[in-house]
Length: 522
Image (cartoon, rainbow, N blue to C red; front, side, top):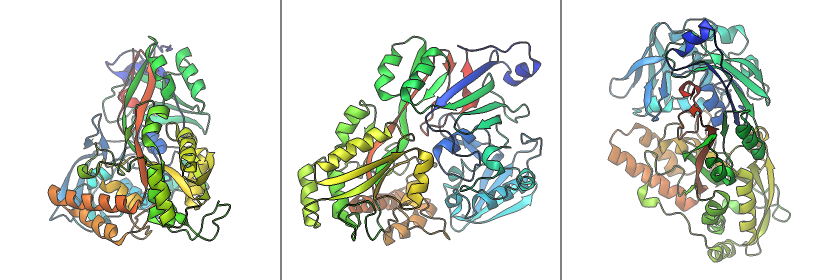
């Protein structure tokens, strides 16, 4: 399956004692939208770029926070901020030296209104250079989880960015950083052809010890599930993500491949246009927005047969979800674990009570290459809603077109998956449930504009509370509000199903990030 590269001194230097050098090819459904680490806050982008760029901290195989470009960190005063001691002797792929100026620049870039990652820095009041290898990040209030919240904040070289006209990201039109990279990570991008292939090679001057034996890696996006499975079985690729659920058992029986399964940290949910005055894609309800009524949203929750989706489409590999985070996340509310029961009669009664007993039509937007079986799930939801008199017109599209549609409010209902980057329940409250506020960098993925004054009041208290019991009580109250208001309809926690050659050793993390530096081929 693999082509061995022998007789190369460089290869021997790169792989140390982990084995002979190898090429590695893998396929994913979604191609990274950009190579800019601050332009798009999505898992396909951040997961891929974690191989190329690095932050002050990173997550290990067990998802625990560990040192990266910072060797240590400590709180400042009584919760005034955090001091980070930076790693010396680190070089970017282009040979430039890393220091505090790059951290300051990357903060200014990533927190700018042009950046899709600006919400990460909502608690930050200032970033101060103490010396070349010490940085103070000041916060507006005590923030005990701040180091966890910046695990995916990636540092760029200030000189490289400025020299190439990419001091700010441009997610609409793109710029030099859209196609080119210059990180400090274990791998560097040597070729980028969007939608076709992306090639990586090891960073020979990487500061850490290599655990891989890869001399060249190539990512190819393959949207067709059958094509991906065929490529794995033929040896054309060494890993596919995801494995189609319906093919997992067949692949498991083949000795040449292995199926690696787990549960992702991602909750799949339905979202609503809370702020809209009217539906955009309704044949008859053109002057009203039924989804502004919590009773209609609750009707949707009772009409969707989640157990049937899990059994038929997910083949029993997913878990039902009642909240915006899974039970594995810190801050999950155990007392609120029960989700709305499948009850079509209750759904019809709620619609009747809200004044929509005759039903209505609307447009449902859905990606067809972002989440596992996303279009099939949306088709099932469409059929289930029709049973209670709500007619959904499904519009499924590639994810590169999907996010612009949601940001332009071109939907009546939409499918969303959310994996908290901090593995904490505060994360989706900040991004999905806070009243959108660009100045405070809140609610940046709250497409529908859900707003609740008490949730907005609780969030800063949750962020600054050190006492776990008090903090959990506030998270419980927040989760109860979101359930009562039916801000979203959480359906299930997405499964992880990867397929790899039998000779491949790797680590599957619950954030679904594929980390190349942990791959070895025997």
